[in-house]
Image (cartoon, rainbow, N blue to C red):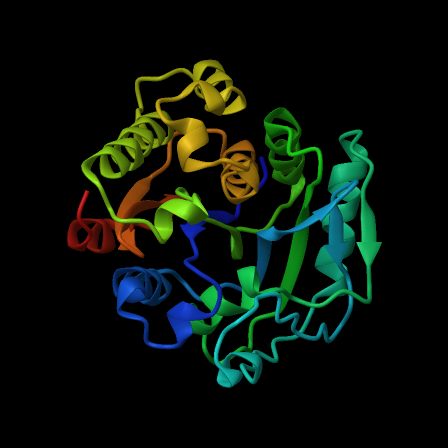
Length: 279
């Protein structure tokens, strides 16, 4: 039986704002630093970023990937952020093989760098930048079932000290972030978060039902309000496909005034972090 990696879905906030001292990200920063301080330091990290889409799952395979500052209109210091972590070509090859052996066409890319879905949260969690990292793209069809299948294929990875991070956002309506936080917006945000929490945490729910709910996530209350486009939710589908069980810990953080979720599957307890977090 394979030793499964620790798996973590995070709501990663807005661009580089978590690194710029933005007060709307203070809870998120606190959660991520607490989690990193609780988990055993991983030997490598695989990040599925909401900010990379390809026609087939694509894996960074370079030894020293550069950073991609894929955000606009932020202060000059946002484009001077450094996170010189190494790549991990061997792990990239293992991920590629796991996907291919499951019948999922995949591609290695030794030129692409790391986008802010990787370097912003990891600079908070592991600021030393000394853990090898690999990034995996979404598939541009944005099909939920496809991303569940990608996660299941990754079950072939046999490394209990690998940390897999789905870097997305459980709420991602850009207009709502910059609108007045009306009772209607709050109600929609909370209704979807409640559904997502129930779906991912209910230990009494059978796995086929859990997978079905995630495959048809757009039937959830206020789903399309919270995700007009689903790229920030789909890293969660990859995480669940890999874990294929109820999550072991759920945390909430208010980010830019919206309730957002963090979900963890793994062998280490995050009880202290969960207790500290509201929701």
